[in-house]
Image (cartoon, rainbow, N blue to C red; front, side, top):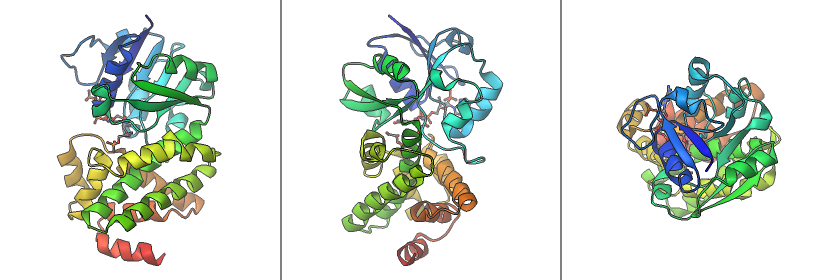
Length: 296
Ligand SMILES: NC(=O)C1=CN([C@@H]2O[C@H](COP(=O)(O)OP(=O)(O)OC[C@H]3O[C@@H](n4cnc5c(N)ncnc54)[C@H](OP(=O)(O)O)[C@@H]3O)[C@@H](O)[C@H]2O)C=CC1
Ligand SMILES: O=C(CO)COP(=O)(O)O
């Protein structure tokens, strides 16, 4: 059995450790020690060749700088997000540490709680190195169907952007704007993320597949999504600080919204949904934001 290490025992890291343990010998570590099976030190994990990293996008840069020493590892990145402070994608953050050929990115619709129950799921392993994608894909259990792709940019943009649209969808639901509005928002959200992705050379087909439409439909239509619940909180008039505190888990859409806002300013891009999510996170009344959105 191949040994696989998982770094980050939050919801997703734990679910992936569970899923991968059908076919692999899995070890896990995290910043906060836990009483769980095969929980070991980071040093032990860094001795393994295959490593899954489930540390959120906003924290991973400092974590890598302070903790990571590359030793020919093969890395599968499980997070979805864009760094708010710099506007960097995960592949740009990791490229300082790991060669392109040894890194892959996981995408697709996958609530951790459903994976934990072994419910059927489909995922995409994305890497410039097709052989590496195939290798990581082969580690997944019988209840997960895996696809591979070389479109790292598409997977990254789709995985990060859908969290922002999920926040908007939660706001739409919380304000009782109706099913017409929800369907329009999700479909225009898909167009917006695809247009944004083109700037980075992302392939259009990634947006109509699991990484784009698949993950967007999942998170923008369910209260199981943390990002959707952020939107419900905004509709209730809560501040982002209060929402984050009540959530107690990561909602990558918040940081990603700030990243998109920064990139849109720098590159003069038209990202109307992301713009209004940003305005509401900054405290604009959702009804005013809606009027602005409909007018522009
Ligand atoms: N949950 C899901 O259904 C899915 C999540 N994802 C993505 O996976 C990523 C992780 O999400 P998830 O596991 O759900 O989030 P959680 O909030 O459940 O867990 C966050 C994890 O990040 C770790 N962490 C946070 N800050 C730091 C830091 N400064 N240094 C080191 N580790 C840190 C935590 O460690 P500790 O708790 O030990 O302190 C914990 O393991 C996100 O990018 C998310 O978008 C992708 C697909 C599905
Ligand atoms: O990415 C996810 C499912 O694919 C999880 O979404 P949330 O972080 O919004 O819960």
